[in-house]
Length: 122
Image (tube, rainbow, N blue to C red; front, side, top):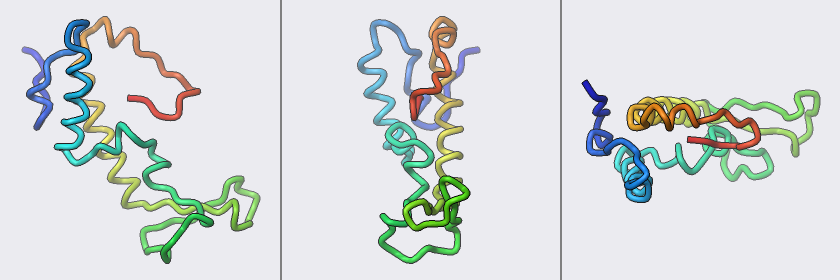
């Protein structure tokens, strides 16, 4: 039995050499339709963290402050993580990756490497 995916993913075929351009365009449309385009355009930190000096509104209850580096307590080293957006991103990314893995053939799965120097990856 072949993997079909959930929601809009059911319409996407497996990635091949012949369909790669349309396939990646379809990925963009699927993330828009699933209301999660941020998983392919942002990292978790880009989506859920704001620097204190860039903040334009009062911190909300679900915001958690932290400092980078941890030993520094100055404004320019203070950040806020919106835990609601953090949770939203993690849930969407897990769904995205589970569906994506089902659309890659075994050869492509073998070629995927975990590269530390890249900030975000699909």
